[in-house]
Image (tube, rainbow, N blue to C red; front, side, top):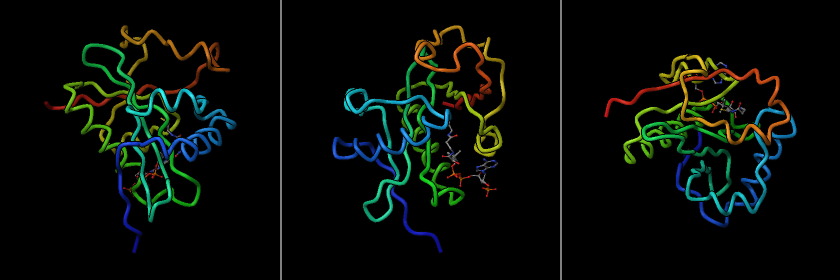
Length: 156
Ligand SMILES: CC(C)(COP(=O)(O)OP(=O)(O)OC[C@H]1O[C@@H](n2cnc3c(N)ncnc32)[C@H](O)[C@@H]1OP(=O)(O)O)[C@@H](O)C(=O)NCCC(=O)NCCS
């Protein structure tokens, strides 16, 4: 029986745990790093998952165009993967996107099977003209990006 997981909007008290979770993945080249300052600035775009007050996952939304939004910084702490928490966070992020009338939810990822299970399809990166790849200039892999683009169009 899994513990009760709560997904909620991030608050300033979450920043340190968010920073540590993202930094762990950034060190392995799976996510872009986020400074504590950037996290404070972007906090309204983050959701977190917690179990008994412990932050065990996070994800954020970044608006890229009129209808297009990207899921970023989606990660579950080691030891809590494979328990449905990532899917719950994706559902929460999708609810937030739908409320904002952002119908096209995309991600750049290595976790294609996970996103497919959550109703996303693989698409060509070239279909995203609105995405200016603004963050890519900070990415060590900008000239050899091997992430896959996935998209879910919401029925709203
Ligand atoms: C990808 C990630 C967010 C998934 O979160 P999770 O909580 O482990 O996933 P869930 O338990 O919700 O999995 C949902 C389903 O996807 C499957 N799944 C999860 N990760 C998978 C993977 N790497 N490959 C294949 N299937 C996967 C699960 O088996 C599950 O299927 P089921 O419903 O049939 O049992 C998590 O593994 C993670 O933090 N990865 C590292 C960071 C990362 O790559 N983030 C994505 C950046 S966009």
